[in-house]
Amino acid sequence: MRGVNKVMLIGNLGKDPEILYLEGNIPVSKFPLATTETYKDKMGKIISQTEWHNIVLWRGLAELSQKYLHKSSLVYIEGRLKTRYWEDKDHNKKVVTEIIADNLIMLDKRADSPMEDGHHHASPPDDEKPSDQGLTKSLE
Image 1 (cartoon, one colour):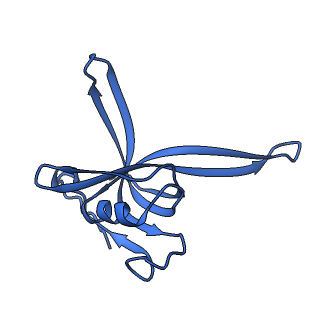
Image 2 (image 1 turned 60 degrees about the vertical axis):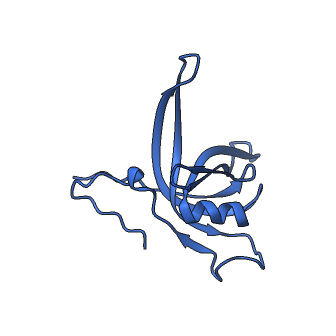
């Protein structure tokens, strides 16, 4: 049986998106996204817990994020988890888990939204796509 790697988040940007252009002028954008859950403890006190997620957008979504998103923007993100490992210049091992987004919906009410429903899709670059082992990926 095949596995499923699917993430759906609604949250607020922790800072303005940072965009970089890779070789071949391919845009990639990154930003932290906060999701907050609230619940009542045994005493009836409301408790809030915030989780921070590292979001990565490629190509068209990266450019849209630069143009339309800012710190505190409310967004819906769909994507998949990817964990990267590397060594820094001092040979310390580093690890980061990111959400590689393939769908973005802007939930803020904004007059300058590029599409009426704020709904956008994009494909990751070829080297970010799943290997061709009979798997298919729908980006409706």
